[in-house]
Length: 345
Image (cartoon, rainbow, N blue to C red; front, side, top):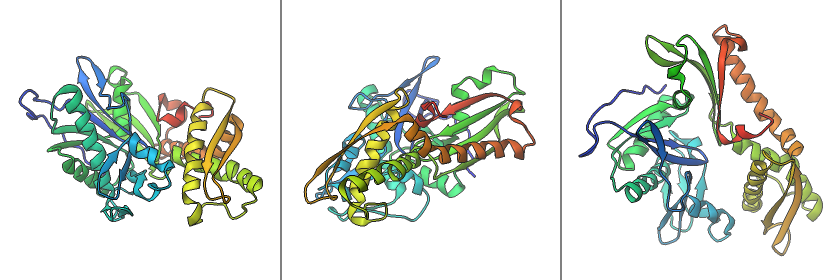
């Protein structure tokens, strides 16, 4: 597993502590700094708190990061040159091939570009070239995945990168250090692409993960695909008579990605509404580009999401059972991750 180490060193002409922290996420990433007794999230060039973890490279080799890259998913001319969710392959030998430019990049290379963008945001907003930061990683990350994350940080220009498990970061953010040291907290972290359930407690004055379980291929993205496969594909097939329109068919790859993006947007809306309308441009289901529109309800999403949610719940229950604990032993449950804003969680 990851073995975070303690660092306290001079990191710039004016800093003697590591004050910046990075959440390198599957779907989105962010950077923040200690500001007095609080935390300030550094906004990007689009004045957003989060930057999509997306990379696009055009035929001349120019590289875009964030929302400008993610938006290329809807551009048929650029569809083979933009990649997302590369955190899921961190620490593997997998290479992403950018067709137009011919470039090949590993997950840590792409992650480094995201962190470079975050460093640039700090330089622009704060006038500071930072070379040290705390990086949060899933508790389920193995050592090779942690090493790859550190390599990404080095490629991004960080001389010091301290890894902190995401559940510990979440517990700190919610004030664990202010409560009874004997209390157990359960951090239920269901993110865009990874899930962690971690049991937190204090031992010998230090916060520790007493037990954890997780799945690096379980998150909001999987709920989005479930909506596509269980709800949207049957409707597209029926409306356009395309019975071979399904995942795994190469010619429909990008139409499916557009449906997934639309499903994600609708899913987020349904956290606050009972129904909404979903719209997606499809280019391959007929001889002409068509607009697919359909109503999506909260119950539609609930049915599609239920297996993923129950899988996460069962992991959390197993984390407790392995320590011989019942749910009543947990003083507080901390929900982390955008998908957990949905009422069905």
